[in-house]
Image 1 (spheres, rainbow, N blue to C red):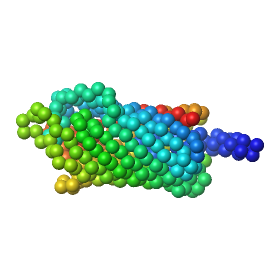
Image 2 (image 1 turned 60 degrees about the vertical axis):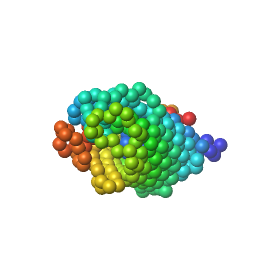
Image 3 (image 1 turned 135 degrees about the horizontal axis):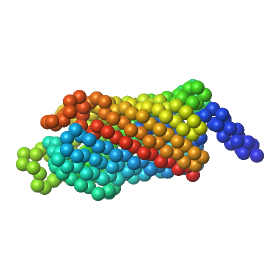
Image 4 (image 1 turned 90 degrees about the vertical axis):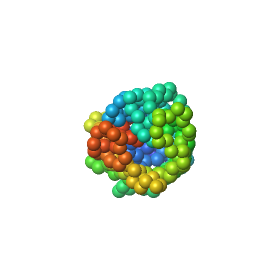
Length: 297
């Protein structure tokens, strides 16, 4: 009886203060919150991300991610995800990255295991703080669609703060990813095309911030911004980019959805002949659109 009363009071408080109905609800497309799932609860996520426009030619990629997340304790969440991608590019050759036209039908591309520990709860403490660790393996290069072995480890921190009794939510992220990668050989490359086969080591710091405002029951609108750079052995700082754009989130009792569009505002580092200035369009595109769906059970 006491447990039922406690659940009722928590639910009423969530409605009264306008807090998300489910812990770890994704208000943003890229920026992560500090919440974790309650012990014993499970969420299933499906992400759809399309990336397009490298300045010249035609380039469009679709990334699919299916993730299952489980609350091992009230503070510690574990998750596993499977990735897939498709690619359609033509009229664009980038030395060392894009050998030429390619149509890749949807196929599996990687997997990831991760954990998230909550140190401070944004709903109970003055500010929320969590840490994440993720380990991933992929076998398709996300830029060219060619075969490429890649192993990555990422460690991150997430902060989250409620304002105006939960009507305004601010989140910030900092993450560092280390990657070992090795391309597979490609037959019939263009004459003189550079396609290095030696293993590469990369370090990628990422910083993000998001702001979301509840403008109606269950509805949040906001904006998020991401800054990412990459350092490679033998090259140093290879690239950097700044993305920003609007996000829209809706949540019902058992499911939620988030739609985010981000556009590259600035970028630099390695480029190719003919690309627009002030952007990085070799490993990034000008636009990304992401739809996230979550189901609680």
